[in-house]
Length: 149
Image 1 (cartoon, helix red, strand yellow):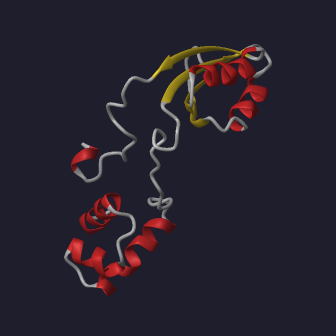
Image 2 (cartoon, rainbow, N blue to C red):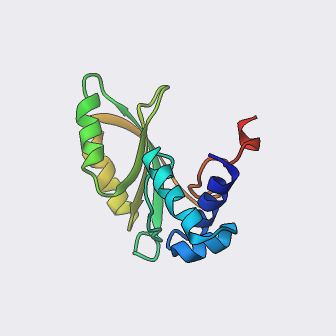
């Protein structure tokens, strides 16, 4: 990724809905000069998509929790499938260490949180933390050559 690609990514991170004309203006090039670059970054897998950011609280989900999940012996695949099928779980990573999964979920109440955890309880041990504040929102890795040092 060269410096022009980096500027394009930074502009799209600020506003993924930029028109080609506005994107070209943001990076200081003509539209024809910019037009193929995002496509090439998509083909290389550097850009996976353009997303919509939702506010869970505004959608009626005031509680966010992080749940560490340790499947019981022989239950790894069943627990993974259960996680994948639980709509309240919006993100989940398979990790090393004592736990196998770390999930982020959004619920409307503590009672709903209990119901979600109860569905997992017969197949895994869980450790739950309610999120008070998100200090760093999901962000991309550092861009640029300086970050590679």
